[in-house]
Image (cartoon, rainbow, N blue to C red; front, side, top):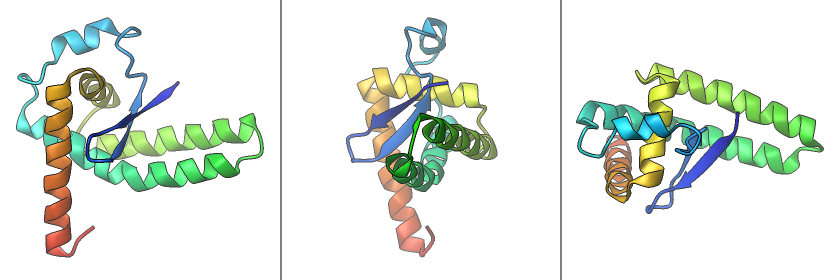
Length: 130
């Protein structure tokens, strides 16, 4: 299972597993920026914020890995942990993939995600929570 990284306009990295619309053309055709409601957007952004530290840790481990097998193990552990986070936020992994595929391919939705990320980070910073 391949993982794709999305760099949002605000500098955030986001992970999307198998988000290539060529592999799954039916996924993105069902979703548009206009059909994603505020609840889905919140769940996606909460997932991204929770996954970010895990992604940074996995990237560091990948750089220190001594072979392809170790890199594969790190990637598999990351995918498993990220999937757990996504599901804890109220999305299925498939919904997350669909939303990330949309973010990869729709500049308006990508901007919406980036704005929501900024908003949630400011709220977290203002309340003393991380």
